[in-house]
Length: 280
Ligand code: THG
Image (cartoon, rainbow, N blue to C red; front, side, top):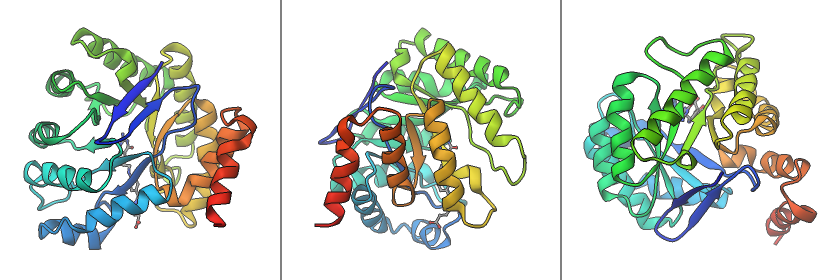
């Protein structure tokens, strides 16, 4: 099970047998008023630094989300994609709920992107999947539908299954579908993380597809979020997530450690290389 993504220069492979692929989350105005104000005034230059910094921090793929109230995404998203691709060669993850913005972004994208996202809602499947197929992209499928996010892992699995089958029916191979079992904050729902972990395991066992996760959501509203994010990350990687959407600066070492402990880093080469590079 291997998902291949392409940027202008680099190819990234996502597979259960390979080290975890880090999707950098920081090109996203949510909760960042300064970035929001830059985007609403059409100032995209800041995204260049946000992109290169994340690569230095160890991200392999960059999520690009410019969604904010008062932003015309259909206008801004393709511009952001072009700008980010002019400074970094890695694949991008196009993060939008706006179909016009998605199509405009796919038109300018060079390579094979990851579309973020489709969900189990009928209308959404019908809108998003044909675009993914037409542009030969890969896609993240969220385990939610018109009735919301089920609490029962088997119901979330059923949505994942439906997304994979519908993708295949329009010509998208299952290798190009990553499932996101949805991380919700544990401050609102005590069982939130356990439900997500159980769903991830079920999806791994029943579908065997690669898995993304908007991981930082787990700690919303709590103090010392990095410690929660780091501890939870080891658990979700063990359960089956191999392409988490995270802040690389915050969790890079934890991911290297998790891969090492799970036998995905022969002779600790990646782990040691990282620390050698830090001390040069
Ligand atoms: N699944 C998928 N895609 C997603 C999500 C998901 N994309 C968006 C989001 N959820 C994942 N990305 C983020 C990005 C930032 C934060 C959380 C998730 C975050 N930001 C801080 C905040 O809002 O407080 C601000 C950080 C800062 O100030 O630097 O927590 O679930 N497929």
